[in-house]
Image 1: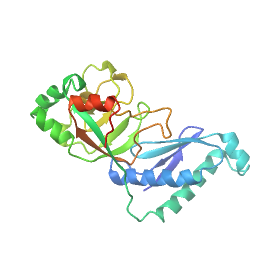
Image 2 (image 1 turned 90 degrees about the horizontal axis):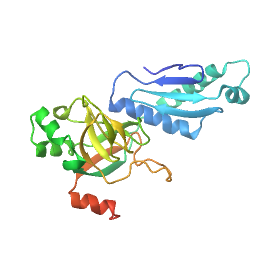
Image 3 (image 1 turned 135 degrees about the vertical axis):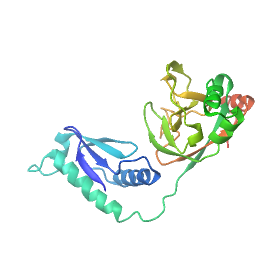
Length: 240
């Protein structure tokens, strides 16, 4: 059951459920798509997560564009509640999702934890690569760093805890596993995920519009490539 509640004095949270599930993510994506068509006066930004969306607003601008006898917070809550009614009555169709193929060179210095993941899970390195590259992963949300995708759909057989000691620097493009999640680092940054490979594709491009390769609701397919193919893509060879 959808719930709308205050989230501090300049934000409102819309809660769609209490578990990580594709159906919840679909509802969140549909809501944000409809909201983008008609944001309220005073809106600043929204931040979607696994189960909810937080809408941030400027109270002064909300009051300036609305009714002075109702608080800015209540006006935002009312607006989002009315939008929820409209969305629920117009989204019975199946959502089309974009599939993004991401090439990954597994193992070696690109995937320093691949052997350890294989050993911990009682699998061969080849089995880990095959199992990791088999699913179509759902992008539940972007977070942690600009363009970092949190992906659902990892095989239970590959679920591996984060490293006991995080690394101070993980290279941009690194693909890793943390618990039941997999994802890829868009920028050089510290991190504790188990790194099993690296993609040559940029995930965050600040000069582009949009600046991220992926968006919530996309499907991701990892395609194993050789080191030679990795270097070729890095040097500008097209990837289809």
